[in-house]
Image (cartoon, rainbow, N blue to C red; front, side, top):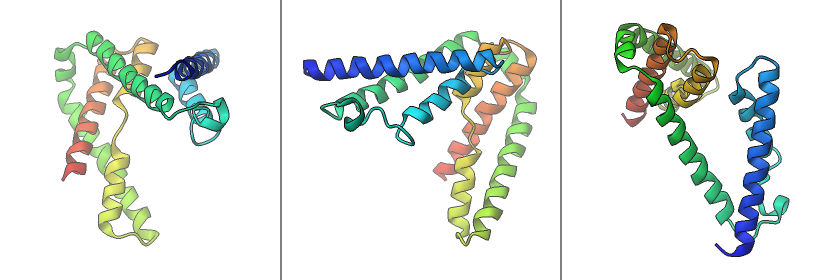
Length: 179
C-alpha cells in the first residue's frame, strides 16, 4: 500500500469505528444491544445506502482499502467468536443439547417450510425455494453470542441453550446447503 492508500484506510476505519461506537451507544441508550446500532449504521454506511468505502465518497484511490476493511471485519468476527468461546462452558452447552436440537430443527424446519410455500407462490421451482429456505434458516451465531455476552446472559442456563440452539441451527443449515 502506498501512503495515500494508508491514509484512506485510516480515514475509512476512523469513520466506521466512530460511527459504530456512536450507533452502539445510541442503541444502549434505548436499552437495546449495541450490535443493533452497529448493524444499522453498517447498512447506512455500506453499499446499500451511502457506500462510504467507494472511491467517489472518500476519494479512495484503490480497491485495496475496501478489501482491507473486509479482511479486518472477518478478523473481528473471529476474535469475537474466540472471546465468546472463552466465556462458554462446554458442559453446560451439552446439557442443553436435546433442547437445542429440538429447537433448532423445528425452527429451521418452519423457516424452510414457509420459504418453500412463499417462493412457490411466486413461481420459483422447488429446488430454488428449498435452497432459499435453507439459506434463510441459518442464524448468526456471532450476533446471538454478542447480544448474550453484552446482556450478561451467556453464562446462564438460558444463554447456553440459546447459543447451543444457534450452533446446531447453523450446523444443520450448512449441512443442508452443502447437500
